[in-house]
Image (cartoon, rainbow, N blue to C red; front, side, top):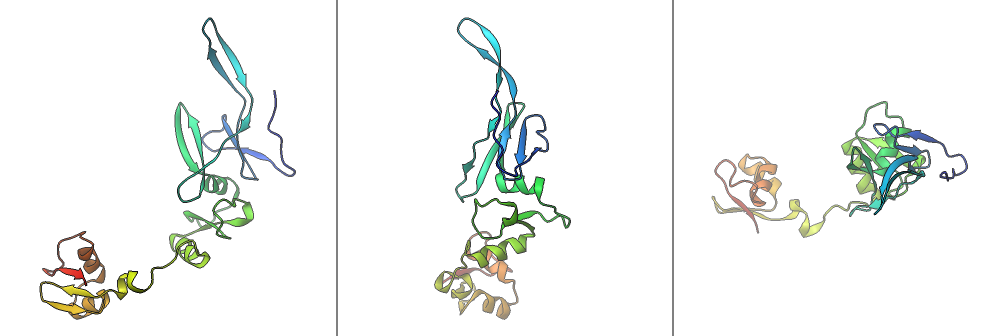
Length: 190
């Protein structure tokens, strides 16, 4: 049987929850282990040994690599960088997210990944240019807003919130039709 050839310095460990089926390497490769299956032909049924092989990866719409692991005929998709981090990067502070330090979404090297909080993840996305903050007219804080109930216009949502004693988030929810009014007041962007 042909084995997957290791790269120089590569080693493998079992994937948690899939110990007898898959292994992941310190180079962020996943392999399917040797397995026995049944092959049915037109005239006979026999068992076959399938060789270990590298698991194919695919990209989601946002450009992240994913893999599908199968257990009991049910497939579950995992982000490759997250699966890798769970197995190879210590997380003593129990942070829930993973950053690609250089901002390249498929650069899954161990030195390019770090555990982070939600805020650290969002800040990192803005700092690396993965997310660009809306500016000018597109930004909600620069849009004029009209309180249709009182007939008063304001230069921005924050000004309306201060002047009327209501929450800015509540005004934004009214303008996006998530709710009908806030404290009996209706708002629209103008």
